[in-house]
Image (cartoon, rainbow, N blue to C red):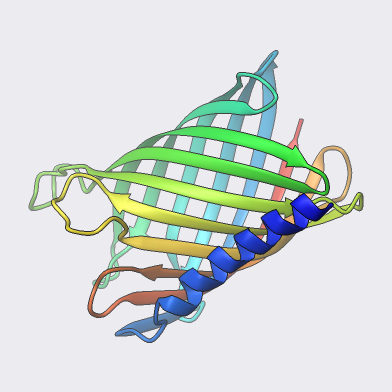
Length: 228
């Protein structure tokens, strides 16, 4: 029990240091609402199919800023390690009120460890995204990102499970003198309605890093997941 409290203290201290040491007053601030529906089904032993639909509202929750469909496969190597490959088709609203079409491919590597009453998960993602192929001025040159996310869940042996997460973004295909270009810090709770149905609600701060006028988003998220 002492060890788990130490892990929790370290994680929360790290999370708060990121939030407090990075000013949230930037050139642009916005409130958002992210809604999602997720489906997962086992194909064969250790291999699962995943499908997700998500709509993200921005401009103080007045317009659908991002709409995407995400589909992929995940393979559970053992009880700790998992690998997944996904494709995402995204429609992103631009300032002149048209939607930019984007194609994203990414690979996730996940590690999970349970130390009662906590669950730790580390996810490392490598992704590339193509925007406006055939009509972009740069010819649709992809952007490559490396994203790392740490999640801590508190297992209370109840239907609900509180959690905290921190994700950091690095843009790989442009020369930079710093490590991170963006971050997301979240706190939320998962609620299991049954073996197959789960709800998720969270609050997230998303912001740009290492820029003179960072954009900061304050997001409320709600999601539903069905696991077959």
